[in-house]
Length: 242
Image 1 (cartoon, rainbow, N blue to C red):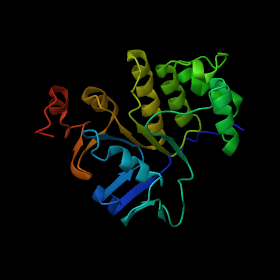
Image 2: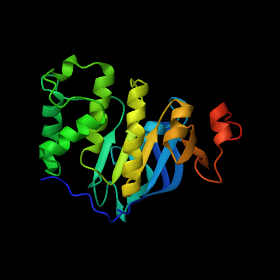
Image 3: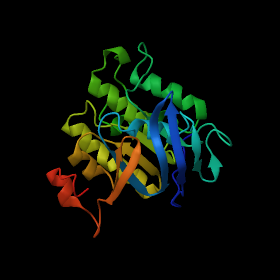
Image 4: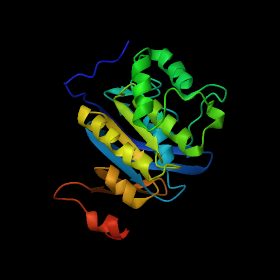
């Protein structure tokens, strides 16, 4: 059954409270306190190994804290719930069954929750610039096609929480152009969107607010849209003003 998209905006709140994560003796996330709300696109910026991907894992319950907590709409991940009820997540590289087509892979996923019917899944594939009737198996896909299919999987059920780790990886300019309206549509619907992107210009173009992470710690949050934006700093790559 196709999921009906209501005119009433969804409301989601994700709250990190003194979230600290060690792996062995290594401090991965350092006393993170952060509130993220629906209807916004948050962009994570930081060098490789700064903690961006681990923060995304924490946001959807793929890792649990050494101390502190993360709470989604009043329910604690790892205690009240193990994973968000309505989430679309793409962390690191997409992975699908190699001997199935793109459509077959997404229909397999859709069968788990039964919130997206065949036509909805086909439309999600079209929206990322792929052909749902393409008979090639996933193993024959280029890196860019694999990334597009992963993005389609994230959006196809119109989840409340969307997490995208480097979604522009392997995408050409046309793929990045297709991504932006999808993000804007889901933001307007009320979804809470958390993404990372190594390209500063792309991150500025996609996100409403940038969260700068260094050594597992949040060091600054900057608005990128509206009167309080720091557009000039992003466009020139000036991180000192960031």
